[in-house]
Image (cartoon, rainbow, N blue to C red; front, side, top):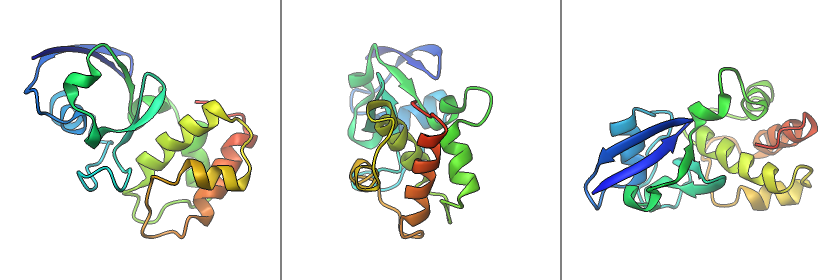
Amino acid sequence: MNITVTVDGTRYVDDVEPRMLLVHYLREVVGKTGTPIGCDTSNCGACTVLMDGASVKSCAVLAVQADGADITTIEGLANGGWHPLQRAFHETHALQCGYCTPGMIMAAADLLRDNPHPSEQEIREGLEGNLCRCTGYENIVRAVQRAAEAGATS
């Protein structure tokens, strides 16, 4: 099937298998390898991207379902420099192995777009679908708080 998507500001027209997952399309066809494949079951959230501004787990979306969509990956979020969320994650040491980090940042971007000044509890609830097996989440929550204070809204 032919699809047309915009990924990180670039328009792509590709013929894809109807059953190809968006995460595989982004990594294998478009070359956006910053979006990791975590579990392929939509449990971990590592593959979270923004689709038309809303966070989605790209392993739970078929590429054909993204036809006509505007996709933002972790690479596109930076837009030539560090996004305030990326900077905050770095400054607060909100990562250890780093595998969950792209998905956490993308979910946090969606959260901050909808709620620019979330409470600690709202941050925890907003990141609920993204799992981290290393950090205990404390520094991740601090990073999102720091990015919110810096005015990060997407």
